[in-house]
Structures are given as structure tokens and as C-alpha cells.
Image (cartoon, rainbow, N blue to C red; front, side, top):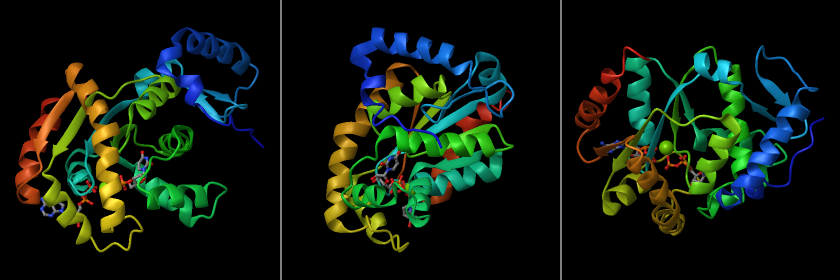
Length: 247
Ligand SMILES: Nc1ncnc2c1ncn2[C@@H]1O[C@H](COP(=O)(O)OP(=O)(O)O)[C@@H](O)[C@H]1O
Ligand SMILES: O=c1ccn([C@@H]2O[C@H](COP(=O)(O)OP(=O)(O)O)[C@@H](O)[C@H]2O)c(=O)[nH]1
Ligand SMILES: [Mg+2]
């Protein structure tokens, strides 16, 4: 049985970079004695997470992130991107909902967090994403709805050791997002007015700084999320088509 660290927050805190470096290199040394399963990856028993080697990252990862408020159309566009460009779609929200349904040890905590429109602790979400990455034959990933905050982003980059190649941001007016979420009809516990208000606040306060971070790095593609699904995909398509030789 793997033991979990209680929280990765201090482990990945951007304000403690020197101690992060120490801990990461300590993990490297420690991990050498716990080589599990995957060819060149190192399974760190104590954390239950995998730290990838550079060689593995090079052949393994090409991934994009889709960001945008609730109801901005991320999931809908992901389906079209997958159909056209053949990515493996990793929806953080879907993975968390699946975890609730599986009645795992984190299920009730995740449910309460989602109901309240808050963000699930990074280590839980990253572990789910990582598990999907590991079990996928397809090594081109489309991550939908993650990272949701700076802490998510830093934790992911520390653990996985890579940044997304491209980030798409679906820019949608609040009234339209609210209308779409209220009409979504998927029986979600968070698609109600009370939770939507909280999610929108969280989006503005925590998700937008991540969007700005990627914009400063020149990785952000802003998509106008108003219009029909096909009209929106007309803006999305060229972004992926432009890097088709790599993907
Ligand atoms: N361009 C669009 N115009 C109108 N409704 C849309 C559009 N794109 C998606 N929808 C609908 O809006 C709702 C939210 O879309 P979804 O893709 O789930 O958004 P997100 O994943 O960003 O929350 C869904 O019911 C979807 O069918
Ligand atoms: O990385 C993530 C993704 C989702 N969530 C939670 O799951 C909910 C639903 O996320 P999803 O991406 O499915 O919502 P969408 O934006 O697509 O409506 C969010 O409000 C959060 O409470 C989270 O905590 N971390
Ligand atoms: Mg979605």
C-alpha cells in the first residue's frame, strides 16, 4: 500500500523554491530504490506519484491545456479536437466525477468540494491525470479544465516535469456561461445557480492568473467562445493544424 503525503502544497509552493529543489533531488535519490513497472519512469512509492525522466518525457509528452470558465465550451471543443487530431482527452472534472462514483477514499471530499465550487487538492487531481497518462497508448494529451489555479499549475509542472505546449483559453461572457451551464442537463451537482456563482468567483480569482501566466509565456491562444460549435472550432482548428508536423 502506498502512503500519501498529506498535502503537496508546501512541497510545491513557488515561494519555497530552494526547498523544492532539495526535496526533488532527494526524491530522485530515494526513488532509485523503488523502480516500478514502467521502463524509464521512476515510481516513487512514498508519494504514489511518478517522476519522469527526461528521456521518457521527450518521447512521451505533447500536450495541450484547455482553459475557460464553466460552460465556456471546453468539453464540447475537446470532442472535436480529439476527432480531428487524435488526442487522448483528459477532463479533470470527468476524472474527479468518476472518482466520486467509484466511492474511493477521496470520493466524499471531492463531492463536497465540487458542490461548493472549490478546487480539489492538487495531489488528488494530478494523481488521477497521471494514472490516465500512464495507462494510455496514445501519448498526445488534451487536458481539459486543469490547471485551475497557480498551485495546480506549479504542482503539475513539478511532478510531471513538463509544461503544456499550447494553451487554449475560451473567452465567454458570463451571462452566456451561466445560460449554458443551467441548460446542460447532465445531472451535475454543481450546475445550479448557487454553485455557478461560486465557480465564477473561483474562476476569476484563481484560474485567470494561470491564463495570464501562459499568455506571458506566449503559449496562450484566446478563442472567442461565442457562436455555434462549428464556428468556434474554425478558430481552434488552425492552432492545432499549425503544429501538426510535431503532433
Ligand atoms: N458554441 C456553443 N453554443 C451553445 N451551446 C454550447 C456551445 N458549446 C457548448 N455548448 C453547450 O453548453 C454546455 C456547456 O458546454 P461544455 O462543453 O460542457 O462546457 P465546459 O466544459 O467549458 O463547461 C453544454 O450543454 C454544451 O452542449
Ligand atoms: O482540475 C480540476 C478540475 C475540476 N475541479 C472541480 O470540478 C468541478 C467541475 O469541473 P469541470 O471541468 O468538469 O467543469 P466545467 O468547467 O467543464 O463546467 C470544478 O468546479 C471544480 O470544483 C477541480 O477541483 N480541479
Ligand atoms: Mg467541461
